[in-house]
Length: 282
View (tube, one colour):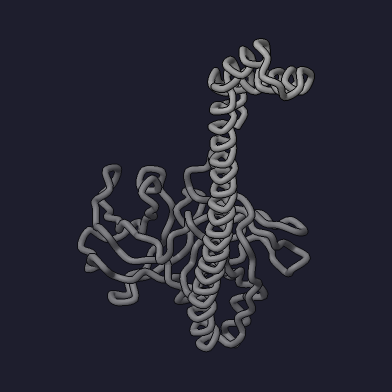
């Protein structure tokens, strides 16, 4: 609309209107008689009447267009609001679905281990400079969480509490080289330990290390915690074997493990609290 007022066409129309108004004023002053002066004025301003008519038509069209644009914009706003509502509903559905999966797997684990106690937590931060998917959760010591507690997503191990503060905790993931836990292959029963490795962590994997070169572990084997640690129960699934490789620094073999869940995309988790080796023995 602002561009219309600044256009040369609008300025021309404004000049014509001014001339028209001037002519009307002169006509009123000179009366209605057909004098030479009024005849000249009539001759000059006859085109102005035509211009005034056209101007009125243009103004009506502009008004109609403005009304149409307003209605169109209102419709867009309504559709955008509906889209926003649907997106919110989809987000709620995905969150609910994720929580259902989390609790379903955790319930199965708890049925097998009735003494397990969980504290639900949300991921509230990630260190972009850390390549090992460590993250911060919104629960800490006031919720019963302590250093070394296992962090799960359903039945899968995703890490341990590296440092617990009163109201939040930092989690060390299973692909971090600082992580280490005793583990075994549930098929062959071969026992060793799982740790992170800087090289394969780039692909989101960890290592089942120090295996015998004649290992029978194969692709797809399930690796679980061995329960040797006083803070880590037995049979928490770590992941599945994707590859078997020989170490370059010694004669041992290692298995590349794909975690059971995508740690980088976690937004909820469960912290296993109140667990001790003695409570499992009971």
